[in-house]
Image (cartoon, rainbow, N blue to C red; front, side):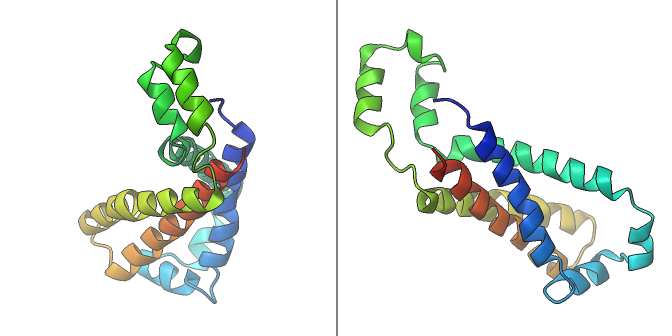
Length: 160
């Protein structure tokens, strides 16, 4: 299994598209700004190049691990220590039988959704509790990552 860096980059960039829609004032942007205490004036002083650059880098990190969670063949590779050349013949036979099984956008979306719902949302929710953020903030921010992980999972799993 080789890592598809182009798929990871596209998956990372997809978060910007989702964010553009999700945080639009006509969708959740106005509520999110109110819940975070941000205003347009506060945002004007921000270094947006750095913010978007780091956001893509972090999304790339997420896409990297989603690849391991959505593509089952990485599990088989992990069982042989990550080096297919050192594996027993049974690994080659397994990959011959199941090499592309479940490598679909739909299957990746399923695992991406589960990762978002059962990992990203609880992480954001826990932080929100200690930061004394509202449930609206938790649902908007956590929901964003559930949607992003769903799409990212589909991209990294389905792109062969």
